[in-house]
Image 1 (tube, helix red, strand yellow):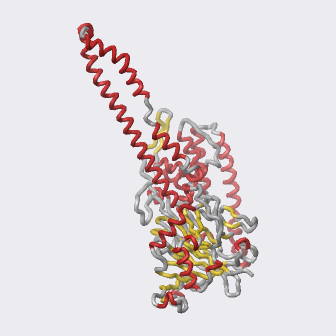
Image 2 (cartoon, rainbow, N blue to C red):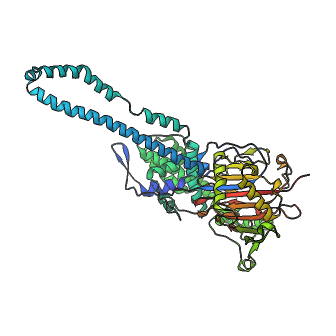
Image 3 (tube, helix red, strand yellow):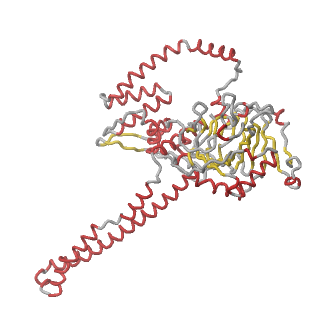
Length: 558
């Protein structure tokens, strides 16, 4: 599948929070029963980092109707920042409510103190007290009028303003999909960057500005949300059973069958009639028996696999693409040799004597040789970056990709972001940047796609993909009225503290974001054939903000 203009729908990347549950439930929490209830003690703070903005600007495309921002907060850090303001407003409203309740309580308290003193005096000599006509009048007045006023004050609901505000704001709150998506994002980051559970729960991530942590309850919820659709609800008075229920399933999904079996047996000691645990026990024992049989022929299977790979032409050091992708995201497995490195240079580029760049040529740096990837330094200003972001943010909607089988736009688990599309005629800055790309590359931007601004959410990513259409997709860009994508121009509009690289798994290349720069490569050979070595991916941003902007430069179809 490949990305196409006008993304509208929503997706989330599957990932299950099993390790954090395992870590926090078994190491951080001491569970003991107290009068039929569960207590959490000995809790050491489990910490995690607030994950920052992941923005991407992809310049691509033709005029299509503008789409407005849609739900799915976890896919867009830009829209998640609006939630911070919403919560701040709610806190202000809550404090106003608390102040109103305190003022009300203070009035009641003053009444109580005044009447306590008055009645203490009156009860010492009731006849003498009411024998005074003024005291008699005030007693009638208090009981007939003032106690009714006090009753009204006590019954007065001071929460109306707060509840009204909360009701209005609630329609803009995240939903279950957002919470599950954010939980999966944490685990995706953990898997991609090989973070152990202690690191992510404590939030010991590089370059963070705002320290945060996961509590035991956070850890439990983090693991429970992604798994609850696969586990039937089962609640007991004793919370230990609930924890063991989720934990046994979590470690099973993680691949630790022995521990899952042990936890299931512990659960059955507490509740021998637990229906699902009894079923799981039989299933786990069945799986273990099958594994023992499978292990007998494991060595034969391994030799068969090696033989199969040799027949298929795989190298001895062959790795699956997913593994290469994640290694490159971590800065591992880069295949640039010292000999090839010596052939990479920096230079000034005047766009083939373009008048605009003769006196102030662009700074050019070779990032990779095959495919040739060039970085342009100081090619977009901070002011231009802010204008583009401001134009895009109100239009963000869930990113989609083109499904070559159905020909329709659809959400994809490998692309988690929101996008907006901008045209050159909408703002002179967009038009000026378009012309800058044309002057430096010599490619006509009149057939290019619109400026696509993509904002990645927490743990957002775009897994390995091509920017061009393959031979089995002859009509991939038919609806755009253009030919295949000749080249890609990718702006980096922010620095990133950790993660966020653009990687090319086929050749072992990693290109790291640097604010104000852009990278450029050709997707097609001169013959028009696609260059499969340009298959690339956007790694999840671990800490920081990432804005990309891609310009898909195209051929004109006749």
